[in-house]
Image (tube, rainbow, N blue to C red; front, side, top):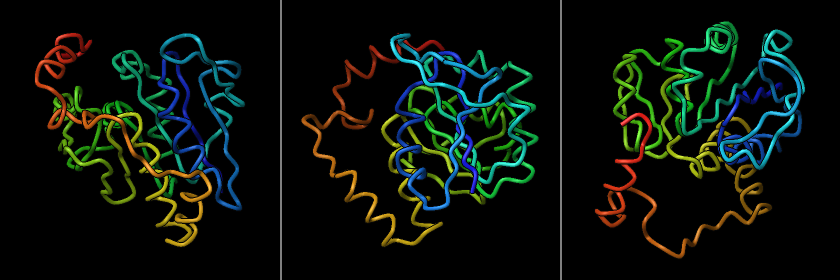
Length: 209
């Protein structure tokens, strides 16, 4: 099973690594990081890079596609090379997935038209522009499309999809191996729970709002 993780300039690291560290544990998984050009691709803060093993044209029939998000999705939403690749590989994928604002890339490629989708709460209102129905859920399945909310939810998406593919026991084993037992120090992980002034401040600083 080939799992292709799309990389592009200024993607968010955990969006890619969360699903990689869960779905990548499938016994028959071949994980390939793919970008327009092979080589290092910098994350959103510029301090970290992941290496793309292959160019887009070298990965044509992955079983699973993972599209991470980033703080400026509008750049890749207008990138014809990325959008055309997503459309092409989606024709034969078993699962097409995204984390955070990655759902906007899928939507811009026309893959989420008429479908329910998750994404980062700051950007959910952009999804209807492309015919998608935004939800506040953490992980959303709609056919073969699996979308996750912001950043950390990529771990949940990976584990949930892992359960669908390999069974609950295997997914639970991976959860235990990674000791994924969230106990956050603050209850501010969603706009419904965080202080109103913090939510307003982030909305004001969002590049798309």
